[in-house]
Image 1 (cartoon, each protein chain N blue to C red):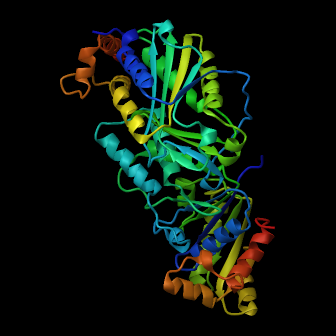
Image 2: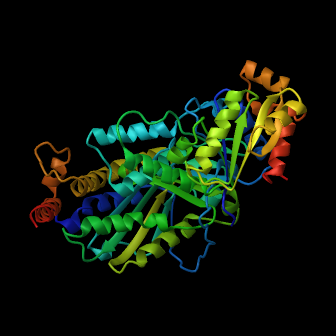
Image 3: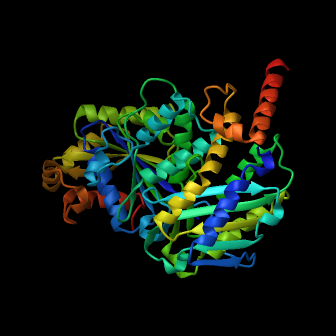
Amino acid sequence: MAEARIIAVCGKGGVGKTSVSALMVSLLARNGHGKILAIDADPAVGLATSLGISVRKTVDDIRKDLIAQIQKGDAPGNRQTLELLDYEIFDALQEQNGYALLAIGRPEDEGCFCRVNNLLKDIIADLAHRFDIVLIDGEAGIEQINRRVMKTVNHLVLVSDTSAKGINVANAIALVAGERKAVDYRDIGLVLNRVRSEEEARDIGSRTRLEVYGWIADDEDIRDFDFRGAPLTGIPDSSPALVTVSDIMRKLRLIP
Amino acid sequence: MRGIVELFSDTISAVRGFVSETSGRRAWTADNGLSWPKGGARNIVLKEDLGLELGSPQMESVSCLLWTHDISAIKDGTITLLGPDFPESMGQNLPFGKVVLAGVEGFTQDNAYDLHKDLDFLRYSIDMEGFMMRSVSQYLREWCRISAEAIRRGFSARILGSALIGLFRERPFVKSVEVIYVTSSPADVVRLREITAPAERIIAAMNKMAQEMDFECSSCDYRDVCDEADGLKGMRERLMDKSREALHG
C-alpha cells in the first residue's frame, strides 16, 4: 500500500492559512480520497473551528494529564505510557464525515518532558501513516511542525496575503525548511490569498523564488462565512476560493 | 498466604463462578484453521467503516490476564462468549469484557513480572484486517473496533479468540489457555470488573515494584496486597537485591 501523503500548510498569522487548510480538507473529504487526517497544529485550534468542530480533547491535554500523573509519583512504565498515549490520542480523534481531526493544542509549558513529547510525536507519526492523506495546519513557524508533529512532509504549502510581511514570512519559512533542514519536503510552493488581480499575483510572483501554486481572489463567501463563524465545509461549490483551491490540489495531484 | 503461582487463584475461581451464573453463554474450541487476512501497517477502523465497537471510552470495559501453575484448571483452547456475537451486533457499541486464563509453568518471583508483561502484550500482535484494538493495561481497559466489512465477512468471537489463543500457544511456558468474552450488558462488565479488581491491584503492585527504585513499604498504596501474598513480597525482595547489586556492583 502507498505511503501516506502529507501536506503541511504554513504562513504568517492572519493571511488566511487556516481557511485554505479547511477548504483543502473539505475538498479531500468531498472527493472520498481514502482516509483523511487533518492535524490542527495551531494553538488557537482555528482549523477545527473553520471545519465546525468543537474540540473535546487536544494532544496537549493528554500530555498535561500524563505529566500530572508522573508528578504525582504515579508514572506508568515505558510500554504502558506508550499504550496509554496511543489510546488517548485515538480517543482525541474527532471523526467526521470523510475525515478525522486531531488538535494538538497549546505548545508545551514550562519544564522539560522530552520523553513524553517524543512519545507523542512518535504516536502521531504512527497514526498519520495509517491514513492516506494527512493535512497539517501549522502556525507561522515551521519548527513547531518538526518538533510537535513530524519532520517529513510531501507538500509544503506556504500561504500569504499580498502584504510584504506575509511574503517575507513565507520566504523565511522556506529558508528555514530548505537550507536549515527544519522539515524534509518533496515540493514547496506559495498560495497567494486575497489577491485583487492577476497582475498583482504576477507582480508578487516575480518578487519571490517560490513557485506560486495559485492565487485566491478576495472571496465574499469566505468573508461571509468567517463573519458568521459558519464552517467552511458548507461553502458553495461556486465559491471562487474553493474553485482555486481545487485547481491547486489538482496540480498537486491530491484530487482527481 | 499465596505464593507467586497462586496470586490469581481466587480471581480465577471468582471468574469461573461469574461465567457459570451468567445466562446465554456459548463456547467454542479454538481453531487454527480459521484464517483471516492480515491488516498490515495501515490497518485502522474509522467511524465511517465501523461495524461494531466494543468497550469504547464511553462504554464499560475490562480486560484481564490471569495465570496459574494449575494447568488443568484452565479449559485449554476454549472460547466462551457471554452475550451477542460480533456478526449479530452490526452497528452497535457494546460493553466489552475479556479475561484470558493461562496455565503456565516456570513462573518464579524472579521472572513472573516479565513473563506476565510478555503475555499481556501479545494482544498487540493480533493483526487482522478490519480489526483494531487500543488498550490501557494500567486501567485494564480494552477498546476494539471491527469494520462493517469484517462483520459482513463473518468476523466473530471465535475467530478473534482463536487468533489470541494461537499467539499464547507460541510461548513454550504456556501449557493451556482459554478466553472469555463478555458483551452481554454494562452491568455484567461492571460485575466482571469488580471480580477482577483484586487481580488489578496485584498487577498494579507488580508494576509499581518494577518501576520504582524506592521500596519503602510503609507509605505504599499496595501494602495490603503484598501483605496478602507472600509471592509479591518475595518478588519485591528479589527486585531490591537486583537494585542493590546494580548500585554496589
